[in-house]
Image (tube, rainbow, N blue to C red; front, side, top):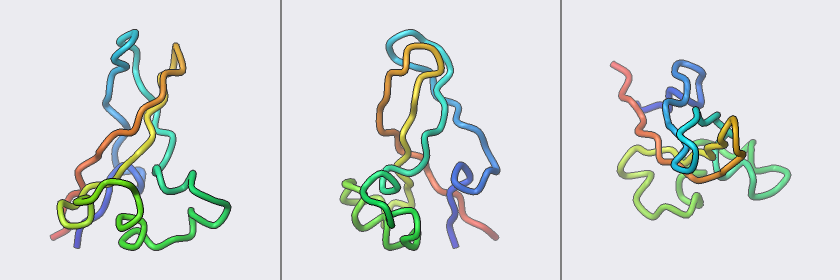
Length: 84
């Protein structure tokens, strides 16, 4: 079983803003922004509609990164980790 450590609060976002090099904050999963009920979609189903064709098979989770200084926003891919 694979999980996204960022979604589950086990890690913090470690990305730097490409514009100003400040720390980026996690804005949540990309699919959570699709509509009012999107946050209630199962994680495996969300990967089928996240706009990244291989995210389910590659065990990746698409997140929104928001710069803490300049508010630059971009979609970031987070690799899920396997639970043993």
